[in-house]
Amino acid sequence: MKLYQMKQSMFNIGEEIQDVNEKIIQQAASPDPKASDEIKELQKTADSLQVRYDALNKQVKEKEEEQSNKAKTVAPDDPKERFNHGFAELVRKTVHKEAIGPEIYQALGDEDTTGGNKFLPKTVSTEIITEPAVKNPLRDISVVSQIPNIEIHRLTFTLDDDGFIQDK
Image (cartoon, rainbow, N blue to C red; front, side, top):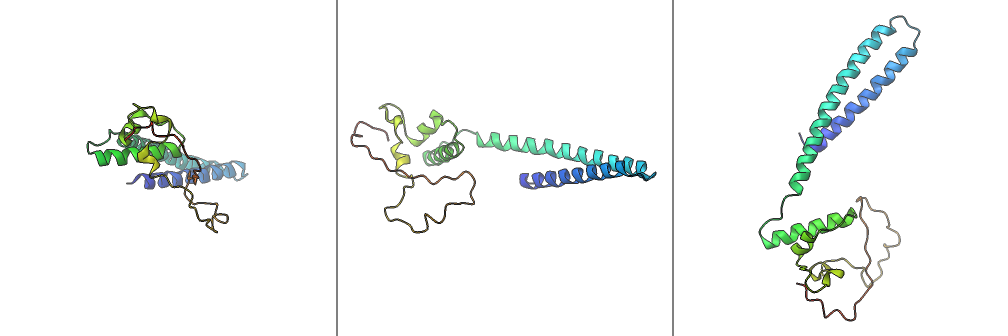
């Protein structure tokens, strides 16, 4: 079962537990003398659902941990794959506003020998999307995106004296 399917099942079971708990409350408030038997049955159902929910929750946590460990594996030996992996990590950490480690900069070619790490590495600066010179008439209209955590970056700076940076 895929992780998203497991999470969906967990969500469905959680809703069922809420429904059963509401029925228990309704039966508890009912003056019907048979309500106690129905409450016992509903309580058994709620306990059964809770056991299923806990088991599924444990499996989801294990699978998420497994996937996070898989994502933290060492970058590949191929330089192109290492660069792609480093660039992907740079984008992920930037979107989540996390600190970027030195191994990511090394994968991108910034060796930190000339002090160029104070600026964007040249390999990254060539791939950054800048605002186009021609004004897009839809830019003012379309400000909402369906992609979570996305920010449209606009860069408007230049460096007059950047010849001292010798990064790759």
